[in-house]
Amino acid sequence: TSIREATMPIYQEKRKGKKVKDRWRVRIWHKGKKTDWTVEGKKKDAEAFEARKRLELEANAPQAEVRTAPTFFKFSTQRYMTHASLHLKASTLAGRKYAIATLIEFFGDMKLTEITAPTVERFIKIQLDRGLRPSSVNDLTKVLRAVLAYAREINVPCAEPRIFKVPEKGRPGLKRWTTEEVFKLYDKTRELSPELLPLVVALANTGMRRGEALNLRWRDVDLEARVITIRPSEEWQPKTGKARQVPINDA
Image 1 (tube, rainbow, N blue to C red):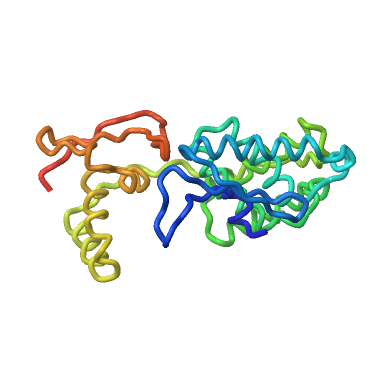
Image 2 (image 1 turned 90 degrees about the vertical axis):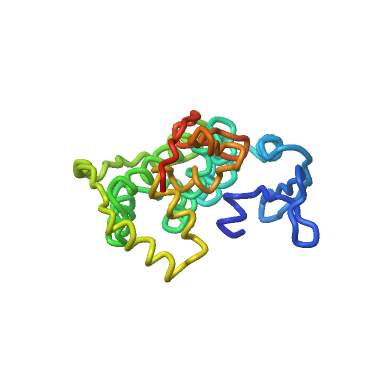
């Protein structure tokens, strides 16, 4: 099973290379075998179906499996993500999937009982050596703590390592880009990826986050009133989970 298949088991169905509206393919791996279903409706309907199916499979599993410490890969993809999908909002769940995929790269083959404090410290050092910011490393270990806490909650054999936060430096003061710097950015974008120039111009002039800009729809752009509305949808939610408005400047 690939990390992508295990952590992102829901795909929009395609016909002749084109996505089919309101039809989703749900794939679940259980005991080394995969099963596919087709679900009609919105993506949230497919996610609810996938969560129910996983719980059904776990309910029918022999109790002996619970008393044996599973690997981090098996537990996080088959049990924790099912739990998370029922309790986290969509935007948080999306980030959680990518954090789990990163954790699997290091802890995947380890049993939950083998994840000790020295092991976690090695993971942290590797991430920092790769150039990851302390805040990002702390986000990853926060997810690791959540996975292990859930294992203990449902009585799955699991270690209980002390996981310390990496010290984070104070947030730097805000830096205002000069007009020259902005146009240098435009020139470099035009040189490397000209198709992204409109997106970069929009980000630079509105302060929108990348996800907000990529999920923007024309119906939310009011050129007459000169305002952009960032609103949650069934497929995506802004970071705060709440709608907000962004002014459109002359540029």
